[in-house]
Every structure is written in structure tokens, then in C-alpha cells.
Length: 130
Image 1 (tube, rainbow, N blue to C red):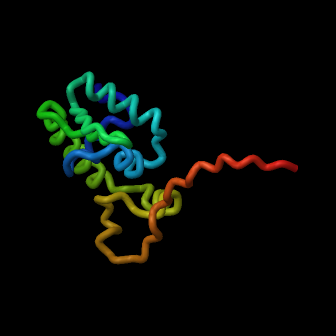
Image 2 (image 1 turned 90 degrees about the vertical axis):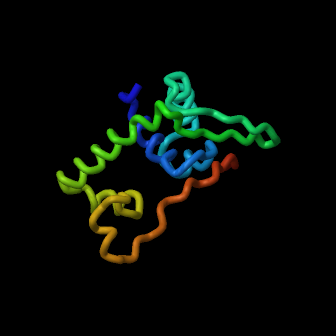
């Protein structure tokens, strides 16, 4: 249930309340849409998240943590505290790769100019003929 790479990250993203699939996709970059949807389906089967389909065109689907999913919060907080206690050793590497420090990083307390995070590029379906 928790062994997947993305499970706890999805739980972390849903802490603030229900989110649409695209919101999760953008906040969990570089996860692929196929991986995210598969993980959400698995989490729904495990009763960790609840899927609500509001219908419409385009479809409006939201995911929220269930009571069972909320039981993971102390574990998530313990992992965050452990990461802080062990001191982050990849801060500069993460900042170079993603453009920002992780949220609980102590480097965030000192205001510095952080470039915006990378944004997904639109898929380019053009064909180049040589």
C-alpha cells in the first residue's frame, strides 16, 4: 500500500483538501499522467483516497483523502521530522534541478531569489521535415 514511490507524495498533496487530477499532476512534476492515474486508482482500491466525479465536459474529477488516508498523516510528519533531523544534504542539487528548495528546508527561512519551478512544456506534435 505504501511501497510505491508516489503514494506519500500524493498524500502530502491532498493534505490541503481535494484536488483535481491536473492539479496533482502539476504539483508532482515529473510524474507522468499514466503513473499518477494508476497510483490514484490503487489508492482508491486501498481506500486511502476518494474519487468524486462531478461530470461535465471536460470531466471534473477530484480526489480527497479518506479517514483511512488521514491515518497516514502522523507517518508523513514523522518522515518530515526525520528529514529535518538528518539535515538536508541535497539542497543545492535540488535547487539546481527543480529551481527551489524543498518546502521544509531551512534555507527557505532566509529570503533568497529562487527561480520559478519548471513548468511542463506543451507537447509539440509538429513534424520536422529535412
